[in-house]
Image (tube, rainbow, N blue to C red):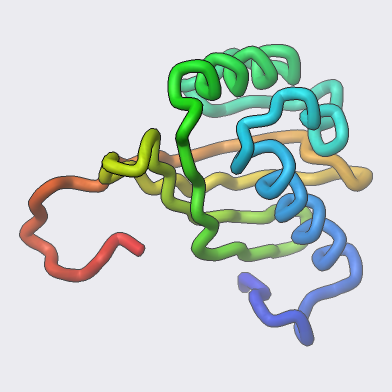
Length: 135
């Protein structure tokens, strides 16, 4: 069961959620590779096909994305916590004119740090048979 209400979260879940929200605020939204060590464990396991394994590779990936899209924006839409796992759902735009893509990141935390990551990324289509927003 996913706990999304502050009243039903354990203290550890709240700390995990706060840590990932800090990661989003300080690392992912600004694409700031210099802040990675504050949030990501040295033995970080990366499952995303977009970045090579390890913390150093994540930093290199963030620098590459920032250089390619200096006007990118990330808008956090939802965050969920369940024990040691935190999920965030957000909209990424490479520039203000971009339709962008939707991202769902799953993080596993241990000892107050992110130790594992999975993601799903989907383009926002120009036209869709579904009139309901992806957001």
